[in-house]
Length: 126
Image (cartoon, rainbow, N blue to C red; front, side, top):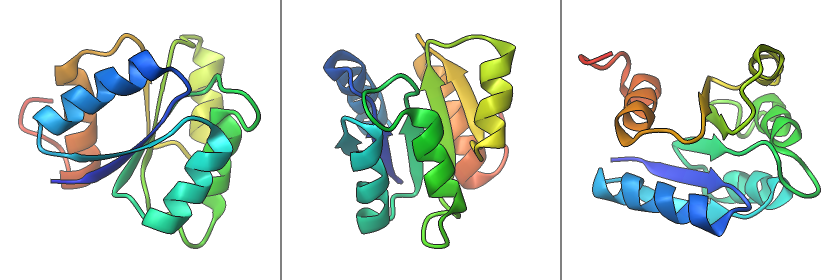
């Protein structure tokens, strides 16, 4: 299926995403902070990025902005996956170039539907 980069500083969240994504046939790459996520995206060119917001150093908004503004990575969709559930956060995420915004905890069905919509066009069950 797809190569997906998970950028999240929580080992628990990262493992949960890995299990869901691998179960659904995806290859998973991982970075534990925004700076490493940006560097890995430039190096590996994943098909999609799942980006947490609250991380030490370069936060998810900043990392998303760097990815979506870079000539080399702007074609890679970024889905912000966070506990931040305010409308202002959603709007700010979109302004940084995010293609999607999901609030944790996210169900397997919702996560896969969002990924499918961005990678394959609209899924039948949306």
